Length: 423
Image (cartoon, rainbow, N blue to C red; front, top):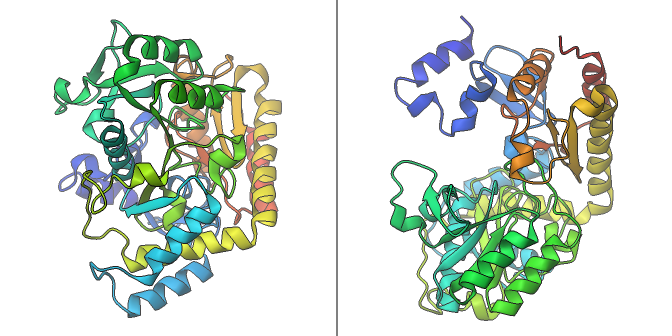
């Protein structure tokens, strides 16, 4: 028995399913999860002494790679001054100013502790500002596990939603309307039927939780236009795309300005952080300025602010080098998959995000995403893992490339892909 197997057996006795986030259980790939011990640069090391080229990157935060010396040194120094004060600090101001500089739409920003908390809070603000209750989300887009967003479309009309988890009362989701990603008509129908009651649309500008699915040309601008028409707000969930797709996130990349933005992952530099912000008049609804209440004991703690601030400053200083490099690496891997598998797979790649879908269909929405053969993906995942490449243990998660991935890492990855035999 390996150390990972032993640790997993013991963990199942004291942790639900043995893991603290479901995808880590490796259930969809039919394997025992790998327990990690440490990571550095582009590599992650397990409890069994194995080293992997890591394309999970802690699900996105590791854009610089693991344990960047500059970030680690800054965090260590900050720890000497204390872990948390529950009081304002200079670093909270500095990161808010930097976020505003990089994403000008975020005129006021509130720091929180996770992406889930950021989206939950942004929706509360949207409802408070508009005086409306209903929210439009897209099937296949994930916005955290708050009750009102854990829904999928029911078998009846688009305007009906049912909870996607036990423990969520139907009354919590009755105001959540489900549209189809990349489908303007589905959004139009909802607004024609419910427009006067819709507070906001919340969307991943690049969907990355049904695998990576970019928006088609004009889709995000359509969302901007229809929310303006009906007096609703547009919320970009940039927990994944923020500071990854470009320094200014998806809103800079696509040239579409949302009313509210939610952030996570990279903004914390590897620490647990989320943020939400947007138009000054909208965010002025947040207590203590307005009547929308939200608070957090550890929000804006100096350690997390240090990690995030240091990471963002590095990205800002080296943006002309970092972003072209990680996109080039990602494109090289994507092109290798395409040339190796041909029409039997579909690859979506944008910036340093990509997904390999084991389907011959073009993947543009949830229906085409779930046409993927998950058994084929599981075999591919196992082959790569057994040969030292750590991919997401799910067909429907993104592959993340970091600036720490060397030419040698990418070449090794591509050579292994070329050698893969499905049968």
